[in-house]
Amino acid sequence: MILKKLGTVVATAALFGSVMAPAAFADTNTIQANGAGSDNKIETENKTETTVTQSNTTTAQTTIVASSNTGGNHASYNTGGDVSIETGKAVTKVGVTVTGGNNTATVNDCGCPEGTDENTIKKNGADSDNTIKNKNTKKTSVGQVGATVAGTGVEAISDTGYNKAKKNTDGSTSVKTKKSKTSVNVVVTGGHNTLN
Image (cartoon, rainbow, N blue to C red; front, side):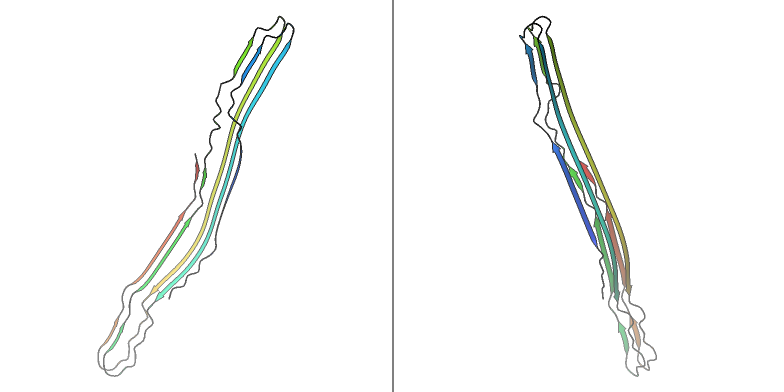
């Protein structure tokens, strides 16, 4: 007889992504051929921001009770003839595997070239005021959290004992049992985070 009671297994995974990636920037700025005393200004700002947040939690609680029994047989108070008790193997096998969730994040570069701004100021009139300002910002933030909690309780019993052959009269009396074997295998593997 084998009894198994499996507890709750709860696996939750959440993936939140927020990506802002404008097209690649390559600014070409030119101030030229303006009149004397003119005020000329160019301001450019290019911003690329990537934010990836991953959270993974696996909680497993497992309780197993397994019992295998061929014992407790009786052959007693027999008169005459042969008395024999023979039981087969009592084998109990239990296997529990808990695997935590995994996070995989692939963050692709926006392909924004760096240092490709082309700025030109030429042929402007006397006393002209010419200004070019370029601001390029690229920011990548990645946060990964993984947690695996496992609680496992195992009770495994394998029994071929407590056989009785007694108070028999005449003849031969024999009790023969085979191996009693209990095998328990519990494997808990935590999750992992991968960032590409």
